[in-house]
Image 1 (tube, rainbow, N blue to C red):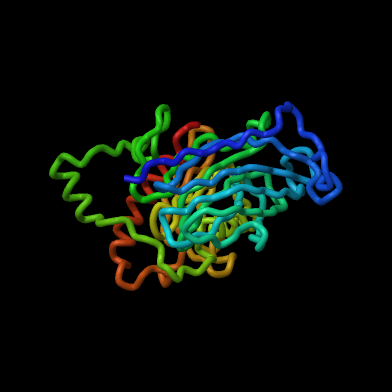
Image 2 (cartoon, rainbow, N blue to C red):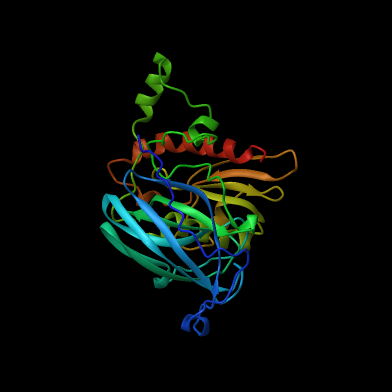
Amino acid sequence: MVPSGEVTIVPFPPTATNRLLPNATAESEFPYIIQVEFGASEFAPGDEIVISSLRGNREHLEPDGRYALDGTYTLASSESADLAWFSTSRGSSGSTPVTDEEHVMVSRGSGKFHLEKTLLDDGWLHISFYVNGHSHGGVYFGEKGSEKTVLRRKGWSDFSDPSPEKPGHKSRAIENGAALLSEAGNTAIMAFLGNPIPAPSNLDAKYSPTNLMAAFTAMSGKAGWPIQRLAVDDSEFPFLLYGVLAGRHELADRDIREVKGYEYGGSVRGSTAAGSTYFSLNITPRDQYPSDLIAPCNRRLMVRLQMLAEAAGKPD
């Protein structure tokens, strides 16, 4: 089991409002200190990310603003990882490219980081470790006093082995009715499905969680799919998209192929009482699957799609 790590909060200056830095930095690119509010977090044992400073060229977190993030990290669960400052989309914002300033490769141990980012959408910010293209724990954060900028609950795990629960928190497994596999029927089903499939070590970055979300956002813009909610299940491979679209939509193969490099690989969808479309979707081409694991990938795929669609269709 992978226990959830604790987020260390470094106190900011005791003030209720943003203020200019009292030194030469006040005349630099990031003159404002923004107080941080922490949200959902999950880490592998021994891992930690500590945010010590969030600064910007604007007083608040907002699209087109430019910001700098400083802090420290401890990586104990892997030899190396990509430490990245990304945004989880919550609407149709278009494709957002990843710049070199937003991530840095780190090795096992502890160190400092400095990342810079221009906000191209109003998504939920997080800083996370990525190992072999797979999210490997991190923390969501936003601006203190601006609740809409903070993702309080992820609803998914960064690890294939669920973490022990914190008080008041339910994992995706519990939300979907999972239980200890004590009955013979459940045991037989789990034996047939096999173990979760890890992402290939040489996986094309095009099929990483961040780029899958960017690709789907681009598809939605071309096909006229208004996104209400969007997320990626990266607990195993292939990574799957799921969420809710405003109105009724088919997620047609031709619309998916409009964005080069992606193809329809299965979906489950339905309609909410409000007339929206909830869905789960695979757009990773089959030639990206490990050649010796195609069958187990496919066996697990349909079960995962059904679970994610049902989760997406539940009312908030």
